[in-house]
Image 1 (cartoon, helix red, strand yellow):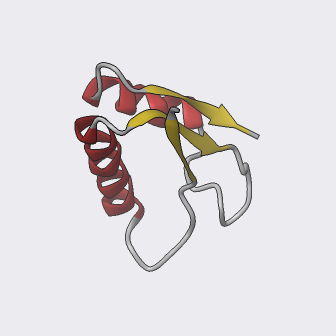
Image 2 (tube, helix red, strand yellow):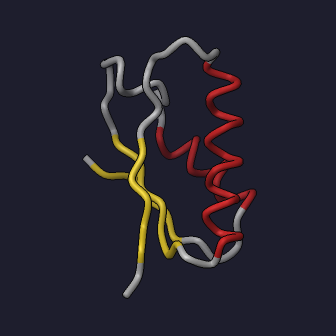
Image 3 (tube, helix red, strand yellow):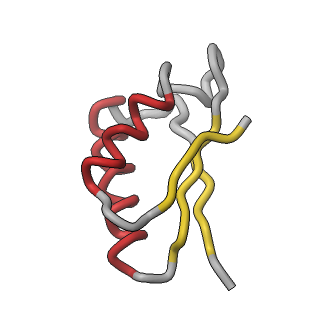
Length: 75
């Protein structure tokens, strides 16, 4: 059985730069744990649930920090 994580970057009380960094560290932890096969994030454009204007750019940062974790966007 393979496990994956599904996430979104929403508007909150934490600054967006801190939120990005926290999420990237979380993705690294997913990979390091060995339990997770994939990470997917939403594409909520123009809503408070979509604070990554271009999910593909955020996932490019994920690619810089991981080697085996699969990742992609979800609608």
